[in-house]
Image 1: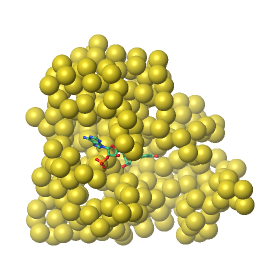
Image 2 (image 1 turned 90 degrees about the horizontal axis):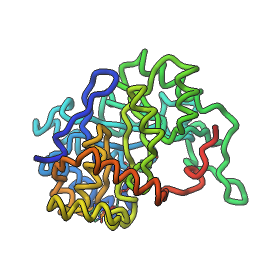
Image 3 (image 1 turned 90 degrees about the vertical axis):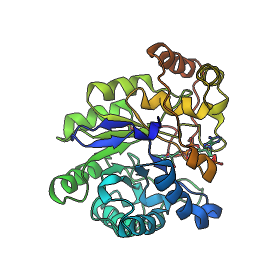
Image 4 (image 1 turned 45 degrees about the vertical axis):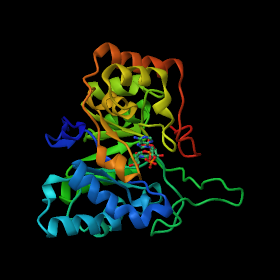
Length: 307
Ligand code: NDP
């Protein structure tokens, strides 16, 4: 069985496929991106696309979805689509969403996330996406990140353009503030999460509050360094699978969403096997990260989220 068939239930009652297709894309791969996405959907069986205004891939995704839906190969409701509001559009998430919907050629997304708990000092169009001062520092505004969340609640309650809303890159302290001060529990929290960064406290907090955790950079991002983790390799040998299957099932078997990315069409086509990791093995993978913590998305936005 393929891990691409596993579903998780959101606090809205909707189902989300546990494995989503990550759509960050290198410049030189863009001309192949549409074919890769078609392989993902039609051959591998992906039913979940994770994208964002910021990634620059939404037009390409829209062209593929329009073609596949138009030709009757898939139905809109067969595909779960997530997009995100980038901090340069913190003040106008509706504009961000409407731009994404236009590019995606869709009427609604299944999930809209606040990409980072940050507000950037950009123009009304959200450009530049990452504004910098003369010293190269990102121009971050002293604005409460909950301002964006409150506007997203309005979108969720009043427009029908986002079936669920959630956050990304929030700490536990930030989630607590959000729960104290607003009246919609995020359906999902997307964070960097893998055996080098198990985020045990955050995962537990989200479980208690019925927030689905989504793991980004599950392979350790570029070059997939997590494939070399000894306990991952041991488990792959034990179950007779590729280490990537262990990294995916580490989340899918624990009730989390996982968002791997590949620009290699053969890897995309292969998909992921289901591996029934035991509770003890899941703990062992967590323990590896407790002892060997490593964060791979360490740009100036990710290092120390502000409270
Ligand atoms: P991943 O952890 O998915 O790693 C991608 C790397 O793994 C690529 O170099 C890829 O190479 C390699 N890889 C994939 N499969 C294999 C395999 N079977 N064997 C060997 N190497 C492999 O990285 P990302 O950081 O891109 O994260 C994935 C997704 O998470 C993004 O696309 C995005 O959707 C989301 N994300 C969200 C963020 C947020 O702030 N909310 C931040 C970062 C990511 P190759 O292409 O050659 O296969």
